[in-house]
Image (tube, rainbow, N blue to C red; front, side, top):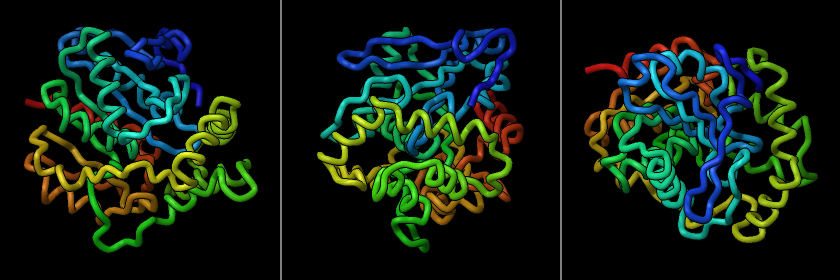
Length: 296
């Protein structure tokens, strides 16, 4: 998806940062207001579906959030324009290490985190392994933080996600099916999302990465699963859990597991909403995030 921010575009905010052996791509809005300059930076961490990137996940949210924070929209390793190393020691452990290294390179002592799905798992692992680098967190259907209490595992949405590259291979029909299962009302998703994400998911570097990944771990990506849910009780950061009532990827019952175990968590449930609350309820999501992250 392409979005225009006040006074600049996605290309204007694009930059690369070398973190050890990994080159990371991100969009950096800078601190554009007095409020943004006074607050900790806000890092947005996208989900893990085919064709995902920081901008495709959060472009519609950046203008509103950038009024209050310096916003960093990160392409996590393996996605977007960032390097795509094959990780063998746990994806979230690796991503958290890279994120802490990115903070070092950018001179950021501590930041707020907004994490969706895969990015929610990265947020949780960063809070566990580098607690002093995290201020507050907003997590949207975070992966890894809970076990399904009622719903089947894997979920309907995860089956669709895992099947995108399988069988006859990627197709526009499969990408549309993925969007359908990610949302409550797919017609609210701009058509550009379908084509942009399909192009990203089928680019030569993405296909080469997926091929190597499947050779190493199989089509379901069972790469040394990290059971973050075992440790969420150790996360004392003030956290806002957000969930779509109709999430078919990481169902709502997972939220109550985290709500019970995390010492300082609260929960907001969006009605008529799937796995992409930041898109389906953009304005309400932005208002909630700003109020929570800016609160006393």
